[in-house]
Image 1 (tube, rainbow, N blue to C red):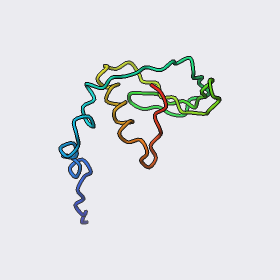
Image 2 (image 1 turned 30 degrees about the vertical axis):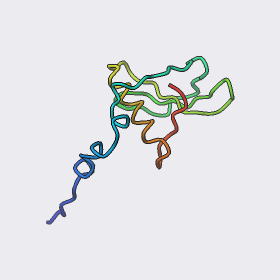
Image 3 (image 1 turned 135 degrees about the horizontal axis):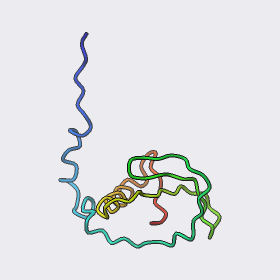
Image 4 (image 1 turned 30 degrees about the horizontal axis):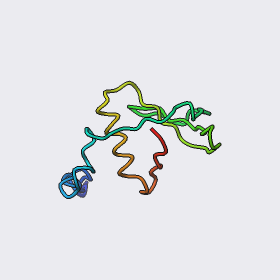
Length: 101
């Protein structure tokens, strides 16, 4: 039985931030502009993860369907990191657009 050796993605992209500007990876200095949570209404739960729960929702201002990700109580550092990751990956395959925070 022989298992081919496959390089993990973590090792392949371990130095990705070296080639990017500081604004790309520095989530600790991100200035968060919080939106109004009253603009959104939860319809139903669609999933969950280690740090959040995900819901189908609606923006009551413009009647647009959306996904609402509610973070569990964690340190502000983790919230900032999550926001920065979504901002950076926006437009990629299978990545939702960040509408509001």
